Length: 124
Image 1 (cartoon, helix red, strand yellow):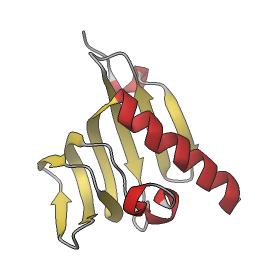
Image 2 (cartoon, one colour):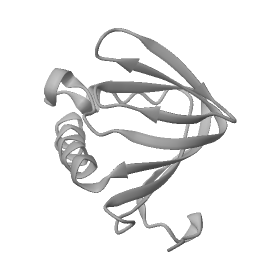
Image 3 (cartoon, rainbow, N blue to C red):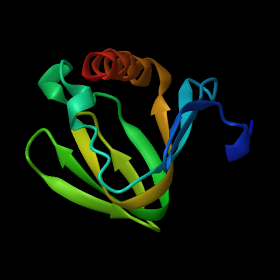
Image 4 (cartoon, rainbow, N blue to C red):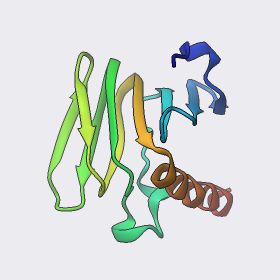
């Protein structure tokens, strides 16, 4: 099974932002994101366990960089050319405009995205 990034469903679009996600990839959701510097996922994760994302992610960064902050306080910078694994219990802040693919278990990701949607509605 394969899919071109242009064929992945757009789930959110705004200035300098495009987020795409496609379920049905063997129990995983494949996502392609283009996000601007300064994007901070932390406020959108409030209400989840430890106010962190509990979905693991595997992926690859084509351009840019993101700082991942784990629930234990450790941090790491993932940047262009890096393949990555983010275990459950993290948040992230885009440090340089970024383009990346990631793969996440659909069930866990959908639980996180449900919370994100509620938070976005609350924040207006």
